Image (cartoon, rainbow, N blue to C red):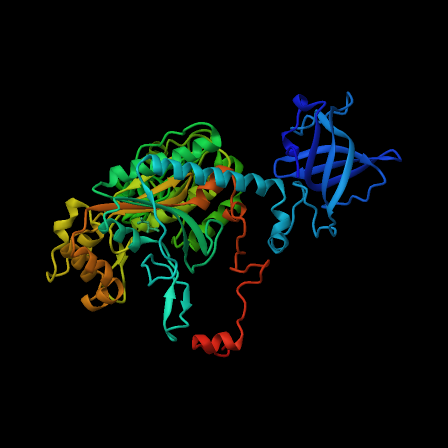
Length: 582
Ligand code: ASP
């Protein structure tokens, strides 16, 4: 139907007769008898000069035939890639008329998100989504190519499955043929990729859809896509190399260059320096250790297991007393008992509500340790170590984090995660930091004991590291993975420590445990979120901007009205009854 895309035309095409198809983006009258029509298709816009009598309104779908010519001198539009030319002497065929769109499709108009999602097919015509979705397709393609280059085989895994233990709530699907029974939708292909290793496939990858029923946020949707990877006879370093290659290929496709990875951080170091296991290293303001300085202080509030500070350069100059008070309140909402602020004055002295309780050497010690200079703000938290790191980590982001599209791409690996993230106060047992198939760190394995042995004390459990690692980009967790347990006695011990009895283990993951009886290769894997990677590469704060048909924050689809009710007959077939809402 057409000879060219609108956005491809330029001075080289002058004199050519072209046929274009697209939407009327804008129409301006030019004198009594002519009109300028900006024609839009996937590639961009071009100006067409048409007969002013033609009935061409916004978003009409048309086919235009005309001749490319230079725009008259002085009327070029350098902001538009095709702005040097126009298509003249046009004949126009209307392929489809259109009602006025419910909101302007111009890039420059802010539209309520609910409206955008209700009319997503119109929103998709806008430049931002066109650009983001093209970028997404390029990323997917680069990732696939990189994995295939590295010998990985694409495998599709089922959507209707038994539950996968990723720690979120399952979406479930009732079975018609077996009323009262349910499939779960995969939170990830975890169990299948491990089975495919037992099946000798050696290197698996898939851009997999995963579904998790958890609260939605800017970086989280019910359904998302991840590059899912598993390989046999490899260690954690090999897996990180494979994945590094894939994300660098993706970044290069978008930016034209391969960013370099920063050195790996251990989980412990990330927590101590940034107060986060997904550190945003685009800016400084690292957490500074002050605990030894206050080992024998007379100031009670600082006689705590951990005292740390962050320094905001010139923060004291910028922030009013009211803002400082707000920071204190904020820190309390995050769980701190208090937050001490200190201002370094131009004469080097320290002003702070608590200055009078600290002696000279303590005040000097804080200034030296933080490197604070005149005008800087120092914020101190004293408490249990995890809480101090948590609160200062959040404050650091709150005060210093640059916008998403600034500061370049800072990829890094966080390694040596703890095996357990805490002790469950109800059961007294440890809570896994990852799924239960994660291999403990070789140096910490012996300390966990073997099947049937007594449970080690809490400090041994909480000190145990795993062979799990996360990929972080600009403070976003892109994904995680681990070396897996392939030995039955280690898996039994981990289940035992997690309070998963033999019977429960058999019921939930019996098929995997059975498979491991028939020769399981050592294997390891990883998964990272495509939506998050694409959002960061596109400079978007919210992954909804890189998903063609996302859900709202409350999990609704205003376009199709999902989730919706189903009729009585369907319910009967499924053996279901809906209870009245209480
Ligand atoms: N299954 C994990 C996830 O989806 C990733 C992995 O361990 O490979 O987060």
